[in-house]
Length: 152
Image 1 (spheres, rainbow, N blue to C red):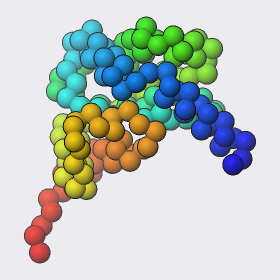
Image 2: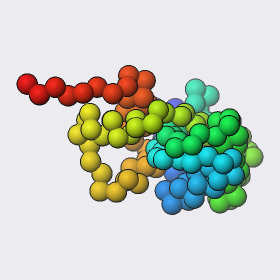
Image 3: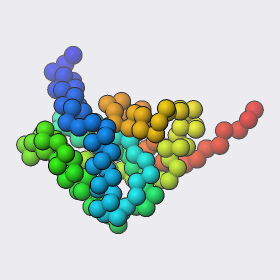
């Protein structure tokens, strides 16, 4: 494994160790309440920026969107730092970037699951992951919209 790939893998592993899926759920809920938004569903993945720093990337489907996604993102970052000393230290050192929040259209998660016949045991399965399948699929589905499957 080349050195830069090893560094990327290390950044992602560290980021995933800073908090659990439950911690992320709590931070998303608190951020939404603070900015008077309602989150329907979200998926998050640890990603690496071009400069090699790690970040949390989220696709978020809102029932009630925030007045500004930037406010939601700032609150989410604050709550993640409050909930994890390791994440807060990494953010203050500059080793981890602020979260990246990408709003998606209502129904994007459901549409992706139906289109790709993916069924989860619970809505939180795979929500916080190092695998990009769910978040990339939902982001793509959100841009192309609903496609009906025609019976042949």
